[in-house]
Each structure stands twice: as C-alpha cells, then as structure tokens.
Length: 72
Image (cartoon, rainbow, N blue to C red):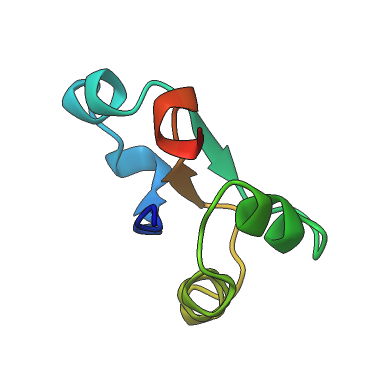
C-alpha cells in the first residue's frame, strides 16, 4: 500500500530556492473543488482541509505538488 504524501503549506514569500529544487511544482488553493484535486493526487482530505482552514484558505500559502513518481 502506498503511503499518502504529507500535505504541508508554506507562505509563498518563504518558498526558497532549496524548496524549489526539492519540489519544483507548487500549487495554491483557490476554490472548494481544489480539495478534490488534492485527494486525487493522493493527499488526505482531512489533513488538507485542516491545514487550509488553519490559514483561512488564504492564497498567500502554497503547497508542493507530488511528482509523477509519488502518485504512480
């Protein structure tokens, strides 16, 4: 069984070059359907919802998107 990727948020202004080397693609929450996309990518629905709610669903926060290797 594949382990779910860990969902983490980072303020967009705090994303560093090292973060981009580690995770080249990042996303942001814009609308409620985005949760469905995150679940389809392998993230835990409750974990995502709680993290986004904690920052008020702010678009000032981004999250690394999994690579093809991690969702395959």
